[in-house]
Image (cartoon, rainbow, N blue to C red):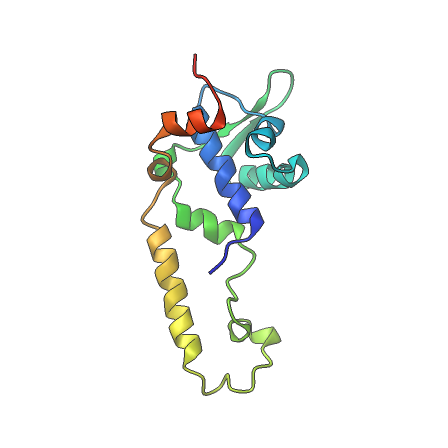
Length: 147
């Protein structure tokens, strides 16, 4: 299973906001600079994360973004499910576009489906708080000094 860049960036934004804490309003530019990724990519990601209820956007001078939920309530598996376009890891998972000739008798798709479910089940065991438990070390990696 491979995650899209969109999901990767979604998780990175959530992690960054968690690390910075609820009192800090981050900007998209700040996050883009920290990860050295495109601000344009992050604009759609942050908009969608807001629509999903994961982040809150404060407009105006001095505005920014922050988590809208406590990190312990943000389940990584849920974020992945909501940010991935599909889970068609093989052609036969997409009934509309399946042209595979062996699909009616193939048992591999069952094994792959089971593997996908196990993959998501593992991600369901972790919250955002779990994956950023070493906030100070991550802040140091980002080159951020806390006051």
